[in-house]
Length: 332
Image 1: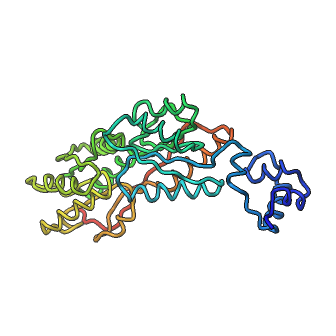
Image 2: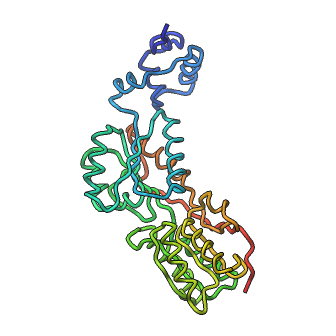
Image 3: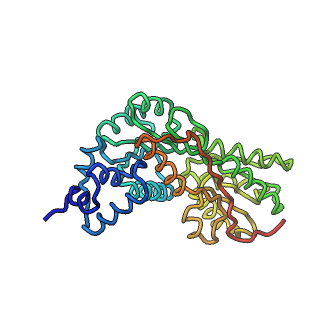
């Protein structure tokens, strides 16, 4: 025989409304009553019907993730962070990739929101910074939060990672090691993140009276990283250090360095960005900027769920990124 919410209410000696509030994590229930209801739920092995829950609250208990990121090393911790926070609050995740360079991203996101009937959306770079997306979701009444490397307006909450500051720290790290011929393998100029990392790195070098030896642009992908690394390492005299704007392109630098019989870190220091699992898998292990992607994704998801539930949330948050040195580098 199926256990119902009425059975739980009877065992806990509370109203059905109170049980419903506990199931929906309402702050209107005091701690003692919540514990009483949760004990009844456990004793009866009660599993609430998602359909009934949705009918009672007018929600789908679905969250959307909108992205345009080909990098699985970023998407994996991003999705794990969102799913972990969502599951803890009784939500499921629907993922929607926005096609790069095709069609209207605003229309695409709105169509997804309408078709999927999600209660709210997490928007991540580069879609979060696309003109009109935040305003369109707000006008449509869809709660939306964002991750970004720069401040954005229009969203219910934005978590900003300080990528400019982290890149400035990378410059200081390399200069402290004694490097003076330093190059940058930057990301695509259209991306906020690439511009922030480039600006921070250049400013960091300027702090020590230095300028870039050279710069080559990649698209955050491995093949573009290989092409850019070949360009940078063909310079005479070549750079003794290269900062790559993500770990994938840093891996490309290591590959090209190996084909040129350059020893890392003796002949060339390489620093990446993101702190992905790839940094630990490479030989030698990669010095990289750790960006707490899963933590950030979980934090902004909790803000979204609070907003869906009618709670108030601070509009802007900031998370630091830190450079982690993986191997000793010879001082020049």
